[in-house]
Image (cartoon, rainbow, N blue to C red; front, side, top):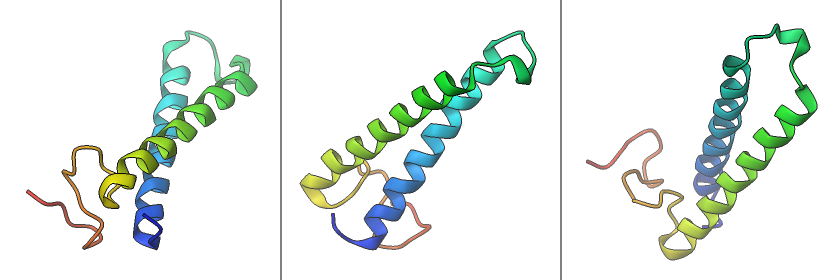
Length: 82
């Protein structure tokens, strides 16, 4: 769990989660982008990213893999185990 590959995978998951939550907020409102509540949106997205990192840590504690279902591996970057 302390490997660079683990933290890269966990970081990637957190960034994706942050972007997905932020995009969800941006696309559900019928108001312009300048009228969005940015501080609140960024706060919720950051909380989701933190939850993603914590989930990866809990999953990695068992076997060093940030995936809870082990559908991917950090042994070979960029490759998934089928």
